[in-house]
Length: 484
Image 1 (cartoon, rainbow, N blue to C red):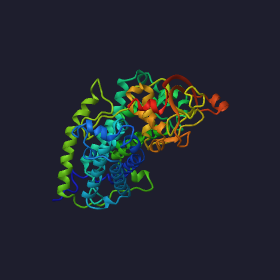
Image 2: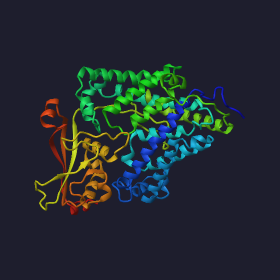
Image 3: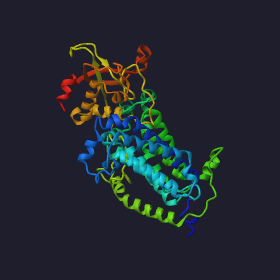
Image 4: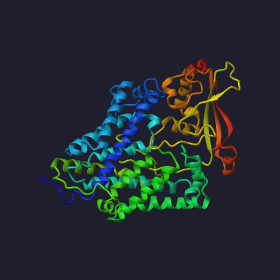
């Protein structure tokens, strides 16, 4: 049975498939490496939110995961290492050189393994880009191998995914904070975003009229351009280029894990080989394909039908006045709703954690723990981390927005600092006690703002901060144990 050519095959999208499969696999490498480095101190057997406690109270039907069968830190390492190795093979294109069932199984394995991680990850894995990566990896399984033409229905499903990411983000803004409608949100965003990067300070100090132009351009990109992804070539490629440029702009101005990078990759689903051949000195180019196996065509059509059915919920959400942001409508994280920054904070508060080796809790000899990504010392410019994801640092940003009683993990975090717990300390940039146990720890809230150009020249400080409140009074190990 020969399905090659005709309506089923997208003969002009080999370059798109090349970028999608290898790029998505690269993000999976980052995700599994992050799990290897961060999951155990955050969620392991002795983590801040231990998985064994979670799976004991949440049934597998609500959060399917391999770890409902059994959890151990060793099993987590095995899962993450296997995922990283399979993803690396896909980056190199090894499974794609075989028949279509080889990359199909490889990507489905990545999806299943990472789904097991996300569904037990609790607050540390509750980000929209986790679902985005899972959905992208699932779809990539059905792009086929180099021996067959990319299925046109899967290419369209990828464009539908990009549409939901961009249009969903645009609509959540228009329905949300009024500063998006009066074009003033960027007066605040670069200063108050969760994790600034080295360029954020400079973006914040751009002229305010330019900030308004940026917001207006963002609205055009997210509310108009997504429809053009479904237009004939070369219009679809131009629309994809706009998405890539704007997402690149966002990468230059902030650390949003792999959200921007992955969205750029997904936009390539609208880029045709012919356009790339004219624009680039090299490209993958359209290849000669063999016949598409009948079984593969049947599987692709069945998955397409499944995704069409599941798309009812996110499509309805897009037109709902009470639109949900970054929502999963099923336990498999397929056909989700995406969006970001429906509201913008006007001021930046940061939780600063300190310890002392003094026996007197009223001492002035306190030393600050330094985090890898979140703002801390005022003379330290934020670092670039995206597309890598620092989960503890993001948790600290959310902590500053609400009560510590809503973040039980933070109490455990303070306990681990008092214990001098080495796995926990690896999540930090600097431990002021070099592994020794402090006598007391405390947490204070500071109001941060960027320094002005004049202040930066005079003081060489990127931030100016002022204490606002004592969040957690000095606690020693005995006090903390009484809370558990």
